[in-house]
Length: 397
Image (tube, rainbow, N blue to C red; front, top):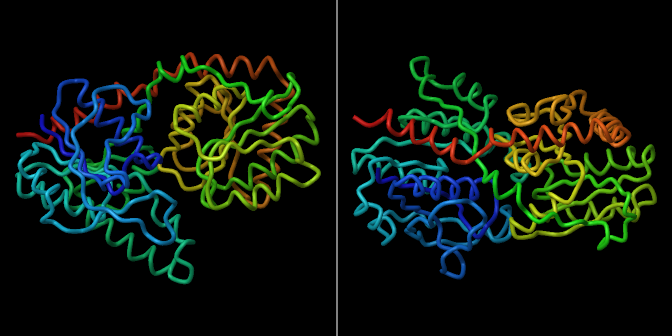
């Protein structure tokens, strides 16, 4: 099949969306499909560097792009909404048999127009809980969320299939779709290269941080922003480290919350126990992650939480605050611990209890690590691509 993938953001900007689109594009190419990615042109106008997904590099049609002055993270480029660009002309000549949009906005609307012109089914993957980012809009957060919800419902109705990366999100979408259309929603999480993650060189953070060899390292990985709840993790670690002095925290990633997190980490109850790496290339970040003993996750705004699958594939037990998509990855009591999210006032305390309990019990920790790595094939990108291909085939005449 000739498959056109459209995306509002793309590599080299790193996010769950960009990694997902790259993984799908390469995975489809690996099983013989022709793939064209329609996405914002990178700042340097070159081809993006690989981020670890298996398969051949797809072809690209680059939309003119620009950087927004505020709100979005540095490096996040937006497409210019012009339907007569060379990129759109290339996409028309490609004559797609499937158009798969990964945003409902500028690139999604272009994808919808291209699908109609080609007589091709439009598929949409809902990667982002847009309402959870309303705090960036200040007093417009409420009206913005209502408008976004109404717009999304209309966009879904134009799609032949909607893919949700988690069962939680799929249930939400089905509940908001017209009664005759819930069967259009499919649960397909983003896959990862399990084999590559399992063979990553593990980077021990202890020597560089000056930590004792016997330190128990807890890692967090992701963008440091309010919607990801990184402060919840630092507060939990402060309590847990008071009970288990060997605990240390490795913070992998950067973002707007980093200054306040650095300030919190400098207080006496955490001083010397937290290392910040800043933003890293994806493979280096995963190698650092693999060198830890435990993984901790508190984000409240995920459609899947791709990093949970990555941590488990690296053989780390996962300690996660319950939330959207968490239980699709973490099997409570098997390869990790899922901590109740409510009441919010006690969230850090409960997460601290889970961290300390597992730190105290090396046998249980080792058993969970073995099950996490041993069962990681359930996250393999090859299976997820095959499921997506099956959706495509079901839509063709």
